[in-house]
Length: 530
Image (cartoon, rainbow, N blue to C red; front, side, top):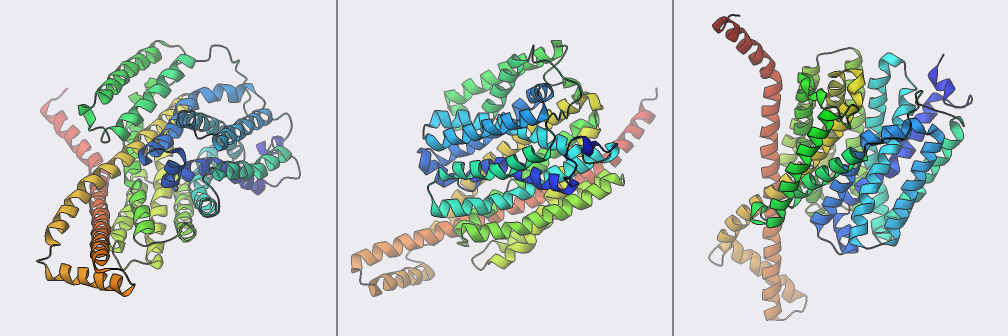
């Protein structure tokens, strides 16, 4: 019997449920990308530093990562339709409270709760997706549609954010997310059966491991805080960083001991015994670090190319197209049981091509058309690597440990995402400072080119009717701004160059390490016969 026939009403076609799932996921993605695309707007609205807004994104991610294991108990207890409605209701309330408040503390708390509720929405949509495919193919095809939808939703949410930030106050974003949720909610409740239960076995809500949840969520939040604010407070020159690191060590030790003693651990640490899972975790972290530099390109696009939010959103559709192509091809290869290392090499090769192309795009002559091909390749790399690495990690452990593997995978993505934010910030401060001093030492009155540029700006100011004194000040400010812009371009080129070299060595490792491991093992058996 077709499983979808027990879930959907008889008149609903299978393809329609995927549209519903897209509409359900889109508000959650908008809640995240709205901050990514409007950090300065959010910082101004809440009276915070841009780093604080970045931390709110990290807190949202921490809510997702820490609540994932606990959410499954709630999901299995309630009827799926009731559970979906409750989750969407909570999501609406959280966004309504965010719309009504400007309090910074409440903002961070609501961001964490928003991440936790997002897990509930993801749980329902994933189960609906898996129900649409044959059991042998459900994992691959389900995750293909889910991650494809999740990644491509960013382009649509950028378009929404562009409209809001240009026409309304920042907090209107929360109302837009609420309204955006209505079509998905109505269609889902209308199309799935009333007493639907996607989980056959019902678990009571007794003995929920709240202790492990609190420890784990605190641990992730503090790790994110130290990584993101470490540079801000000069690392271990600050007592607060020392205190945070001390608490992290205590929490980590407590969490590990608690899980080892528990009969039903929050996260089964036995997954780390599997070598392929450890390999997949390392590869996932490396991949997220490589993809994190899209923020550097975004800064260049907005500040140097002066591309407005609308045009940026349209350009990002080329990225979405690349994701669809990459994730679709990868799904076919995974179903055909192709060599996983070749898939990874292809994915990182796409990212390497993207970095090489963007290295040459960064410059004063860049235009909108020059972004299409690089962003397409970046999308291809994302689609190939996201799906293949996630599936490799899940297949590396027994099915009984898949929940722990998924939860740990989200935590690794959280860690790598935060690390990439900190790395970009560190490199920006370091390289921009180096280039600014190098340029500053050459831009003097003794330099004829500098004198010509100053005179040009001064004449332009005088032509507009300013006094001679004001014209000199304006000319100096314009020249300083030009130096800053050129410094930012040089930083972007440096970052993409170093990241391109980093990706090359990752590919080299993927290609050679298994062969080297085999030969070292062979040599070892000859030297030390057993």
